[in-house]
Amino acid sequence: MERSLTTDEHRRLLGVSLRVRERVVRTVFRAGSGHVGAALSQCDVLVSLYERHLRVDPARMDEPTRDRFVLSKGHGGLGLAAVLAERGILADHELDTFGESGSPIGMHMDHRKVRGVETATGSLGHGLGIAVGMALGARIQRWPTRVFCLLSDGECYEGSTWEAALSASASGLTGLCAIVDRNRLTMDGFTEKEVPLEPLADKWRSFGWRVEVCDGHDHAAIDACFSRAKDQGPAVILAETVKGKGVSFMEQRPEWHYGSIDSAKLDEALRSIAEQHRAALAAIASGGAR
Ligand SMILES: Cc1ncc(C[n+]2csc(CCOP(=O)(O)OP(=O)(O)O)c2C)c(N)n1
Image 1 (cartoon, helix red, strand yellow):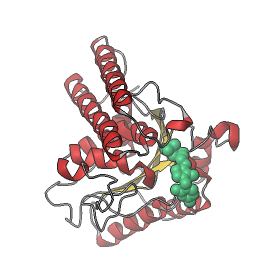
Image 2 (cartoon, rainbow, N blue to C red; image 1 turned 180 degrees about the vertical axis):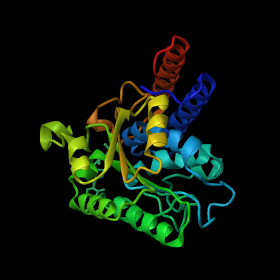
Image 3 (cartoon, rainbow, N blue to C red; image 1 turned 90 degrees about the horizontal axis):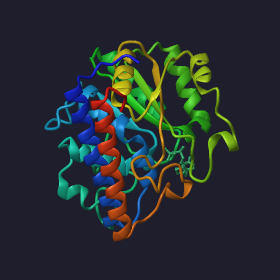
Image 4 (cartoon, rainbow, N blue to C red; image 1 turned 45 degrees about the horizontal axis):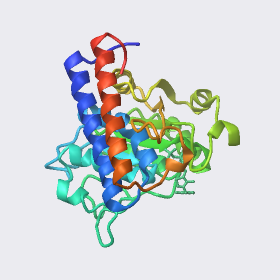
C-alpha cells in the first residue's frame, strides 16, 4: 500500500479520530440516544477528509468556491457534528445540544440550521444526486470546487443512487468523489446475507466510475485514495469499515446501529476507544498499518 503520510501526521490523525470517537459516545450519553454505530464506522474517513482534503475555511463556510461535503447517509449526522466540532466549524456548546428538543442540531442535520452542513439529508439515496448537481454547478462557474459525498452501503440498494452514478459518468465529472462506508451492515442485518451487493467494485466500474478500495480505518490508506481520486473522477472509494469501530462491544452488532448508553457503558466505551488508540499507535511505531 502506497504511504503518503509521515509518521507524525499519521499520529496526529489518530489523535483527531480518538477525540471524535470520544465526542460521539459522550454526545450519545448526553442526548440519550443516537446512531452511534454509523458514526463510529465513518469516523476515520471523515477525519481524513476534513483534516487533509476538504478545502474549506472554518471561519468562512459561505465562501462560494469552497469544496463541498454531502453526507448522503444522513443518519451519520452525529458523527459529522463531532468532526465539525473538532475542526472548529461548530462550537462545543453547540454540539452539546445535539438531539435535544428545540436544538438546531437534530439527529439528521439541516443546512438551514447548522453551519458547515451543505444540505439536509436523512432519506437515504438522495445525496449523490445532490452532489452531482453541485459538481455540475461548480464546473459551469469554473470554480476549483471538489465535491465529496459519503454514502452508506445500504444506499447502494437505492435506485436513485445508480441514476446519479450514471449521470456523473455521462457528464465526465472529474471534481466528484464518492465514498461508500462499506461496513456490510444495514439497520438490522448483513448486506451479503440479505441482498448481496458484491461484486460492488465491478458494479461501480460498470457505471463508468474509477474505483479505489481501502481499509476505511487506515489513515494512510484512506489518504492515498483521496490523493489518487483527485482529478480522476468520478471516483468512488469503497472504504471497508467496521460498524461501531473503536468500541469493541458495539463492533459489527446490528443492535448498535442506534442506541443509548448509561454511565457504565460510557466508561466502558471510552476505555475501549483509548485501548484501540494505543494499539494503533503501537502498530505505527512497529511499522504496521493503522
Ligand atoms: C429511504 C429510506 N429508507 C429507510 C430509512 C431508514 N433507515 C435509516 S438508516 C437505515 C439503514 C442503515 O444501514 P446503512 O444504510 O448501510 O448505513 P450504516 O449505518 O451501516 O452506515 C435505514 C433503512 C431511511 N433513512 N431512508
